Image (cartoon, rainbow, N blue to C red; front, side):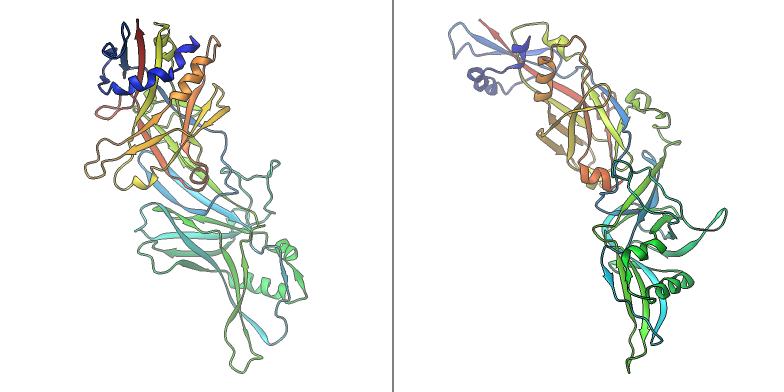
Length: 436
């Protein structure tokens, strides 16, 4: 059977001439008798092979190396109610001689967040966010990572009342600048300023009394991305100058500071409501499957009967195998989400066996919203499956977005399965049979 997975180079050029591959079950075309004496070729194509598609919940997503800070709440009829909170330190690893003495007078404190251009949801609604101070050190996990489910305690005024370091209400769009500035509690700002003025202070000392920041949303609308350039500012006047101007001490989120995004989803009102374990079939999710960045949803595709088809005839040679995956995202609003896919081979336990660099094309008719599909050449995967002579091969394909997006956004991909109605996914198996 292993030779069924090999295309003989001498015959491949002839197979390419067969441009009339018929897209119906068990179709065939006979060619070649005019080129070689007593030899002809049948080109057969199947596009009704069974696909098993499911949405899988990956264990955890590392967000301590995300490309941005994420904050907000967004409600999506398919993806659910998504919430993003962010945690980070400020200060970097330097030390400074801070201003001290009677000539220096603290005025106010603020936190600067710079837009990075990413958003998910309705950015025209007013958005309110809250800033809290961490009550414990921001430390990495045992494997030197922080995840989408990680969390740390924040300071409280009483047992059940968080200490509100600052709050800010704004409308993300239309933009009125490249950043937002959040006024912080005056008393706490003054305490930090006084501490810095006591003596030469190392940043590690500063982090002992100001362990970090937690930012959470308090209104629903959208999830926004902010750059890794957040900055705590302590403003002051220097009255030793004849014409004093307000100055500030800046403490940025530095390259050696820890940060991560805490992400969660309420899917109780969606077709994924029954995703209580690790996997849900498209049959139980409205004929759909989902990728959800940041929250660890990926798509698994199994092709259970491909070996049975090829076992019918030892003379069958694979020409190519393609997946056509029908896209269910809303257009044109969600067109930007349809990014490059990461394609992996996994076993039945979802352990990664191989990553592929498969030819992938995306065909989107954004004007009319039809014919939205990915086309993937999975010939290498099928040949590997056939070459694996184990009696029960339960390897499958795992689809998700590439790493940077998968860890740094809440973008999603929706695919229809084979029963999706007008738009559905399918596999196209094209083989050659040599006839002597």
